[in-house]
Image (tube, rainbow, N blue to C red; front, top):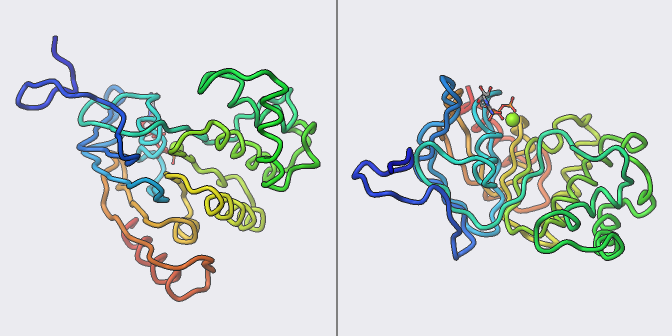
Amino acid sequence: MTTRTQARDGRPRPASGRTDDGALRLAGVGRSFGAVEALRDVSLEVPAGEVVAVVGPSGCGKSTLLELVCGLQRPDAGTVQAPRAVLMPQGDQLLPWLGALDNAALALRVGGDGRMTRQAARERARPVLAALGLDGFAAVRPAQLSGGMRQRVAFARTLLAGAPVLCLDEPFGALDAITRADAQAWLQDALEAEPRTVLLVTHDVEEAVLLADRIVVLSPRPGRVVADLPVALPHPRAATDPGVVALRQQALERLR
Ligand SMILES: Nc1ncnc2c1ncn2[C@@H]1O[C@H](COP(=O)(O)OP(=O)(O)OP(=O)(O)O)[C@@H](O)[C@H]1O
Ligand SMILES: [Mg+2]
């Protein structure tokens, strides 16, 4: 039987697999939906612990890329090799009938590394919520939380899934500027406290420069890597730092 992930020489190769050094490797990845070609020939290598921002125009395949890394989709071409990766999807996707603590603890209750009892999951989730400034909100349901708080709960849930790779899809896209700056600060703190490999999809080039070790710019659909810019700036970074301003400009030029 042939598969669409077969190499040109006819030898089958895995469409996905685990890497043993914790790195994330995409080689020649393509993905189409019927006549719509979302991604073309995307190659990307992310060493363990690196934070990579992915920016690109709307519809260029950013969410598709994250889903491929998390194993929620398979590539039509090329290979994806990754350690276990968990997706924080676009939109907070919290369950409206659960409080903040149970929403965060959900990652421990379903699938993953063993199902915990509700009580055990709550005990594990409590300090993670507290570290994100939500200790007083354990029982509060999503509708009563601010947008920024909902994103913290969704992030807590993502962290608690315990995967070495976090795929964050526009985590702060719906937040106003002040809440967004605050969100960038707690994300930065959380990653400093417990480093993970991160793919951060964002429309905001400034956010990319403030948070990432590297910025990957995708072309309009079909998404291809058109720039791969290292961000060699010390933390904490401010939007007004000359280095931040210069890189932001450079990334914007590649986006155009
Ligand atoms: N399951 C699907 N079925 C059909 N088409 C899809 C599917 N998923 C994505 N697409 C199409 O593939 C393209 C890339 O979609 P994707 O959601 O990955 O883009 P994106 O860069 O995340 O966009 P946005 O910036 O709007 O979030 C789009 O044209 C989209 O309509
Ligand atoms: Mg998307």
